[in-house]
Image (cartoon, rainbow, N blue to C red; front, top):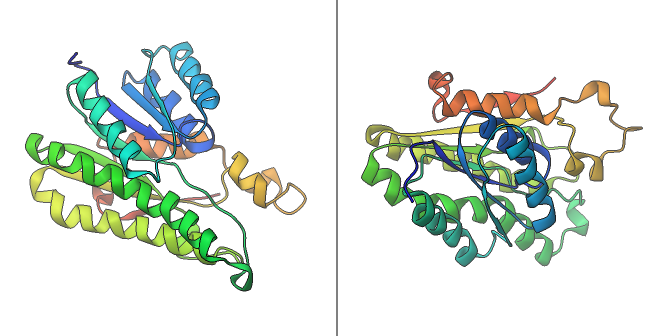
Length: 237
């Protein structure tokens, strides 16, 4: 069924920035696909989207590091919505592990979830964007990509790839009407942050709410950050 509303995929929508983005865009009238690993959390976000005045989102749970699932998120969205306008890549994982303790398995996990997963989605959506000569991709990276905290050897490097994807998308997509942006948040009050940094180490007074990032993402999608196409946008307190 084709919809006239903006159609947007949000990954990592079960919590943190992804959840805040989904609720914000739902209130703005977007037809959403919510993707992430935990179905119960995605359903909670879906309910919050409806409570915010939005339509019921599509919900797809699973590991986006699996290319087959990532592709199916795009494919099902196109099949059920008729088109795709925006892709917001928020999903990721951020283990705090020193270099000497970094294993092969951890490297694979971090790069697959933070770099390969968004790449799988982008590559699958790209031909559709090319055909329509329109589309917007917003990658949520991290300030760690340029200023890594000790212990973010793998995470910071994987997020650097996410920054690079945006530069490449801008280079190839600008003439086709495809827009790409990268958000580099600093300390944002999310469950992922608190798994690594307790309040005793990083007080809430030094963090921003995830809604602050969500508003910047909405500005990118809605055309208020056009000067930042292909760039990294730092959001920090």
